[in-house]
Amino acid sequence: MTPMPTTRAERLTLLDEVIRDVVEPNARLVDENGLFPKAAVAALGDIGLLALTVPRAEGGAGADAEEVGEVVLRLATACASTAMVYVMHVTSLSSFLALPHGPQRSSYLSRIAAERLLVTEAISEPGSGSQWWSVASTAERIDGGYRITADKSFSTSAGHADLYVVSTRTPGSDNDRDHAVFAIGADQGRIESGVWNGLGLAGNSSTWITFRSDVDEDALLYSGEDGAGLRTYNEANQPLYHLGVSAAYLGIATAAYRAALERIRTRSYAGNPSGFGSQLSQYPVARRHIGTMAIRLAGVRTMVAALARAIDEGQDLDEMAVLMTACKVAGAEAATDIAREAMMASGGVAYSRGVLPIERHLRDALAASLMGPNDDFCKELIGRLQIDGSSYHDL
Image (cartoon, rainbow, N blue to C red; front, side):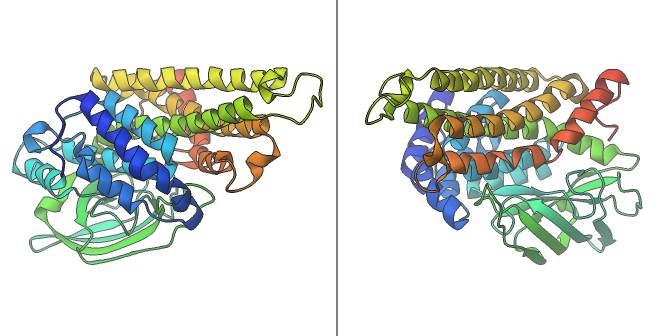
């Protein structure tokens, strides 16, 4: 394993090398064959980026949100599946970072860094979909710990992660808003998962997973009745999650834009079929397509940067709730619109698989608005936050 670089510039240089040597060369195979990006995850672990947000005292880089956003953006521009695996990894680390300073927190974080563990969440459920705040899974007190019975849906990296952050109802509670959050190792109990066959994001294994696991006391990260456990989860995970997925959507959009730009710059005709010249770059409609995409990219890039600053400045969840939620929607809609615009700008060849990557970017982008909280809910939530003065926690 490469020693953890001490500066952001050094880490990004190593990341670019991994992208060039591992992520980009495998992106098409990951998509075409639905392969989990094991080589990319291993390479990210080798350069210390699986411990990017882990504090230096526990063997990580202690990086800020701005750097997380940049790492995700670069990964997503190369391979959206790899980027989403990474987004859920850093999101899940937030539950450990939210623990009080002490042996439990230090033990988990040190182990994640030293062993290069891949972490993910198993939060959403078949009965509630993207409305993750309503849980039916249970945790029963047993001697020395808890018995977890959890059925989850759309868990990124399901069947491939080393450590899962799993939500249940608080032990003894029958309220679906009373959350407990546990850390469950991949070898703890009977854990089964499905096979992912998505239209896009083909390699991120975002499928169902079930847990029938007995865990010890230290596996409980936090819990609480009257919404306290859910509140802790929201405050710990939602800001970085929204930043991560928004940066990933921005990366997908950027990749589609770059592919269209390259196509327009290099496409030539045998003659002058429309009277504008023999180069596609000479056509006003091609320039309009590029202008439209560039404008949307600039807007989302600004929003992602603003959200990263808000997180790094320590704004509380309600302070950044509108920006955070709007950023997710803006990124999701821009990814789909830009990928479609890129296809229109590039012509029919962009619709064919294996010729240009634009069709892959469009399929990847279509997942964005469906990811929880889905865009319909986000827009309604922003309306409540603005009109009623509601809290983000009033889910």
